[in-house]
Image (cartoon, rainbow, N blue to C red; front, side, top):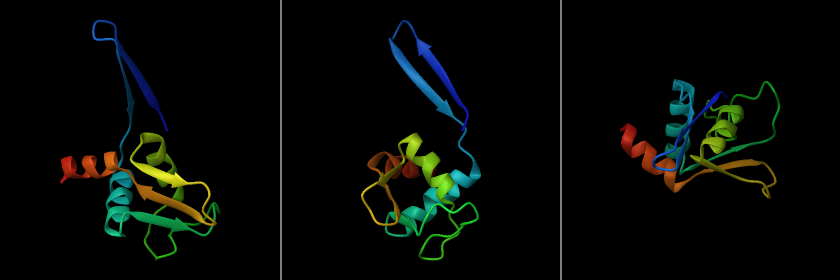
Length: 95
């Protein structure tokens, strides 16, 4: 995932910009529609569905975690993601 860093010297702010693709948008909406969570049985390279049969990639979910839109429960038995408050707010802006 490519990131761009923009620092505003006057306002003393840092903006981290990432490319938000249609895959990211689709996955975020699917996670939200699935009670705000997605779960995978592992991180297998060819795994493209969560345990509920949604066509979501765990790789895209990992990128959404980096963006702060999903949260990963690292103590869960399976690979488990949950939508964050920021993710919900961002979905409102997209809708």
